[in-house]
Image (tube, rainbow, N blue to C red; front, top):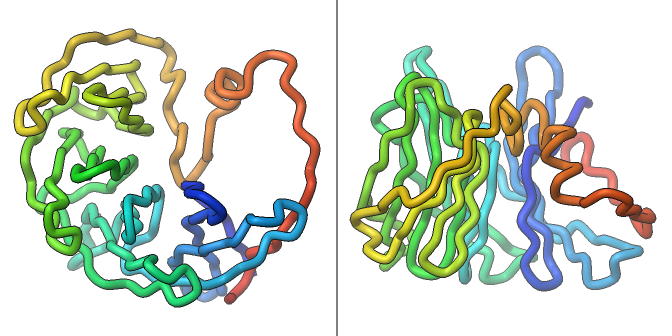
Length: 231
């Protein structure tokens, strides 16, 4: 077995990890692992949920986890978000999902409050905002097109501000009116500094990891949980 994790969201005493496991012969398990980290030295796997799309990102809001990734439809790459009910972390279950008609792949997701934020890329990349009034049927509120081939790698929401880190720089959006996101700031980072950050292939880039940890920060491993193979 060869397995790898692509993203993680920690809420309270649980970590939600998107992962894929190759069984060989073209067989691939796509799943979300829900891990109890109440005792950090002894993390416990509570449940696994298989999803349809190869998951590249995950975000949890309320009783639902939203993953973003890609599937192949008629041999073509199609962006998709899957929805998991995590009301009971030990009995989490896939309850829905939706394809994005433009194709491509979802690279970034952030669920917060009543809104779901998705960033996807395929030629014409875009950032989209969805209403979660019905968590099982997100309704598209707004679409903001990025530059061609600009990959949206990370989304963070702070109040009415959305920070969108892409392969070309950091975009700061005003979301006071969710149906009409407005670009209020942009910092070009150059050299694709954030390319691959949060992607399934590379996780956080070395530069992004260093920026998040800060110079001179050290960490000590307190516990570990193997997630390779079928679980």
